[in-house]
Image (cartoon, rainbow, N blue to C red; front, top):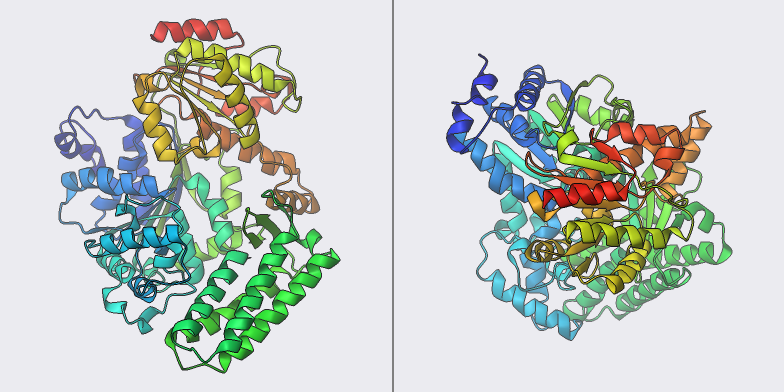
Amino acid sequence: MSEIESFFSNPGPLAEVIAGFTPRDAQTTMAKAVATAIKERGSLIVEAGTGTGKTFAYLAPALLSKKKFIVSTGTKNLQEQLFHRDLPMVKKAIDKTKKTALLKGRANYLCLHRLSQHGGGNVLLEKEVLNEFSLVRKWASTTSTGDIGELKTIKEDAKVLPIVTSTVDNCLGKDCPSYEDCYLVKARRKAMEADVIVVNHHLFFADLALKDTGFGELIPDVDVVIFDEAHQVPDIASEYFGENLSSRQVQDLTKDIIAITRSVLKDADQLAKIAEKCQMHMADLRLLFPHNPSRGNWAEKLAQTDIRNQIDIIKQSLDQLYEIASVQQGRDKDLDLMIERVFEFSQRLEHVTDVQRNGVSLWYETTPRQIILHLTPLSIADKFSAIMQAQNAAWIFTSATLMVDDNFDHYRNHMGLHDAKTLALDSPFDYQNQAMLCIPRFLPEPTDRAIKHNLVDIACRLIDASKGRAFILFTSHAMMREVAALVEEKIDNPILVQGSTTKQALLDEYLKNQDAVLFGTGAFWEGVDVKGNDLLCVMIDKLPFASPDDPLLQARIEDCKKQGGNAFAQIQIPQAVITLKQGAGRLIRDETDKGVLVICDNRLVTKQYGQTFIASLPNMKRTRSLDAVAAFLHKIE
């Protein structure tokens, strides 16, 4: 019996630390494949259905290999769960002495230098922010890690956070007076010395793209890189392999410059004036766009005279700011760094307004207060495979949703993983008995406005049959809010709507309230784990095709057509299949779970591509009758 087989057998090392552990063939198969990839320093793509136990299946062989490895997860929540719950268990069974480290992105750590800069009752801060600031100060005197996540007294998106944390742009690095006590530096040093480092995808790619201090030294040291929730990697990577510039970045920089002229360089009036001008010009650019948040094709916008002129004005004022600030060079370390940032922003502005570049998409997005200009590569395959080749390591990619139409071609091509071995493992759950899929009859087309009333009626029937305990998921916020409001008038169950508070607070409220119903969009399609009778029904309003006016998608479609491809089949369907599989995956989370999945989109039956979607879902009992669904739900009770 191999080392892996004996580890996952009962009796065996894992069974000793987990009460009631039962060996699963799929878990052992995956662990053996991971062990082989690590030994051969190869790459491996694994789709492991819900319930396979994939976390232990990659942690065990990685720890048994005695090599240094990084695990990257999709979100901070998963990162913390992995670090605080799963990793300690496997470590206990293999080697308690292994050093492990949890590393978060820079914005998660308190910056002592910025805290002291704003210490003297800063006149620029609003009253609400001053109040938050005093809470941060109080916590700062007791924390040992500086991890903002410990700070429960302020909101997740508190306005004070950008003031007391650093960005790559404003960090002084080794020149910082607080460098020796810096929490970020300490966390990174700990990671450098660890055998196992747990990060998330955003941090992995941010630091890879920026060769950020400390992390550029980290990756070359590891022998194994494991991506969990690997279906998210292509989108996150392309964001970081591109460039962006936001009005907020410019506003923050000019605010910092003005603050320095009020404290250290009181004789630099002209500098403060031109910084204020820059701020104003950037705000004027935002005013040229509608008030409501939107996204669009930036190259097309640049063809408009008023927008082109405004960009020229911003460019001139950044150049002027650079010239005037350079006169003060050498008087203050913070200012010297700011001068570099002014130059860098000016360069970035040139890049994101260069409409001649090929192979990239130029797009913009606005929020109520800012505008962000993006340059995103249309394909990351070349860049990513070059990174993998430069690193003599094993690369593991795993998720419950990577395959489309029973193969890995879509993922492989997207990521440039042409030599990777692949493995597909079905979920061990008995979907035929545990779950039912319903595509209701007599639905109008998804684009028909009348569909809203059908969705309300179906939701009310399902909520009644499941006595609450349902997730009603939508592809758009607007439709979610409209349907939720109409349903609320017709039923007595408590209704929780995404956006009313944080995701975690909504989930806690849902679990506490035995007959609550949760209305959500994208945030609840993945990374949410509700077991047992707390979730009996998942309703999805329609197939989750990306919005056709998404500028990045448009550019990829255009590019695919130029190369003679079929963009609908090669880009839009695979993306939607993976998203649908994620949403469906909320329903059955363990062997005893039961429930129904209702998808209110008749294209699953009327269009040929509907078969691709259905074939990608777990093999559940199927029906088109809501009566059959109600009967199935009553039986669970």
